[in-house]
Image 1 (tube, each protein chain N blue to C red):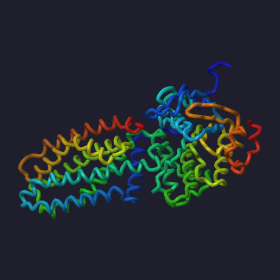
Image 2: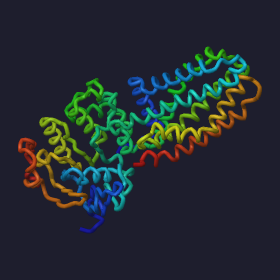
Image 3: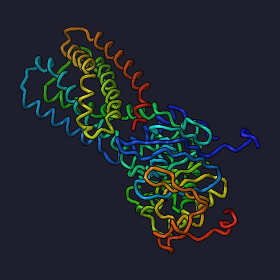
Image 4: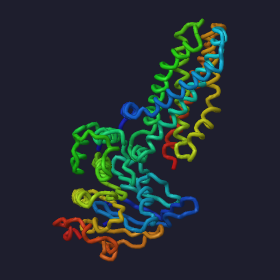
Length: 244
Length: 228
């Protein structure tokens, strides 16, 4: 197969370095990520996972190096094709879930109320809920944040600590949802410390340490799960093993 | 694929969102009103002018009070975008940055206009004001002057949003650059109130100021929005 007939990479990162003052958060990351897979980024605090995700999503500029997302070097060209869920919920506390989603959907040229309601239902919440987001529990906020990230049906999804402060049951539901999206051809990047939750559904794990990419492995090997209790593991979808 | 949203559509949606947030929180309006009211009352105790003197100083007092109160509101404008890092969600979207700037400027214009509507009757009462010149000209000056304050203010508030002492930074940057506009709005108002000279020159100056700064701010807003 020649180069032109190869499918476009979901993300391509070349020698990416990022400094914050004198601190080097990323030290020359180079990696290619094929589309249609669920990648889990692992590493200790300060390893550079969130920084890498923010650089790929275009929220931070690399000090050196280049990033291509869905074949484009200018991230704004593909802004409609990816979604991002950050540490913070990226929602207005004074508005309801529906009001938030209607506004953010409008930024993507979507004016369908039904589509917003569908996104809220997808994350397991009721679109008719009139309470303001500021009055939601942390777990509910995380779910609405996920709904915001997927309301425009992106083909590429970046999730930074989506399970933080989320109860185990909700986290499992979110994991199953992500696996379903991956099965429909979406590419998903998840930064998490809860590797066990992602273990049944992850296609590949990317391990960062002190700003360097130190390992890429299929699935999540058991040695990377040891700090996490077994009961965190999500139920294994029927076709998970076959996919690997 | 969904087509990229237009500037006016996003401006309208963002303005509606800002008005809704302000209606619910009343952050900007309350702090602005309280501050402006304090200034008017304190000035009225500080001076005891005759009707003639009032007409000469009222323009200056009014616009200085509005300028200070506007700064209070401008700081609030972007603060709510920093909570929960909501601004990142806008930066990630394909929505044009200029639409956000226009929406914020229009929102601030409305807030300051409401403040003026409430403040002017107080000024008239406290300073026993009667305009010698045509009152409709005051309305023109008010619109142009308010836009001059908010367009620069919105831009510089965005510029100082990520600085640690943004409450101090904003007036430090905004006041010097607003001097030509402040001069024009005060002199135009005084000219109309006293009826001694024509305010046309000052109105033209304000118009040019508005056009130049609106254009420059719209062009420069994208790098400001995406600054780290």
